[in-house]
Image 1 (cartoon, rainbow, N blue to C red):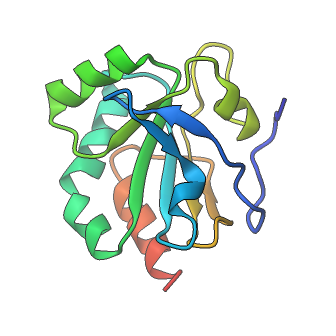
Image 2: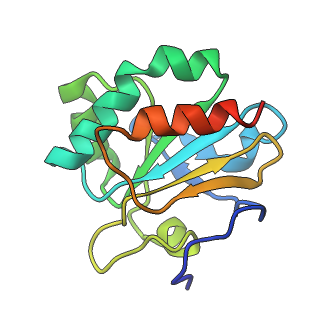
Length: 151
């Protein structure tokens, strides 16, 4: 069980989790294609998590222009993610890590909720940047700036 965040430069551990539609998403399917913004957040439909998700939603065009995939991960269920997506019109995938296995591997599993941490994973599947302290209102712009340095 990982208790520390994964270091930059290491290969991101692969995983497969269901998204809000129940479809399976495998991290390695993006390798060689595009960078991935893998953001862990504590809980659906809570103030900070909603702010962060809505900023990623509103900036979708910018992430598409950067050819980057945004994936949100929490320990909530697929059904909870469905409600969160519908309520706020989220336009990216939320992954359900109900068993906390991925959260543990990435060092973000708290007692009950995931810690708010983002990993920027480059096209080769390596961790290019770790954001251990996230300000929900400013985070989307911060991640976009980091993606631009990958090009």
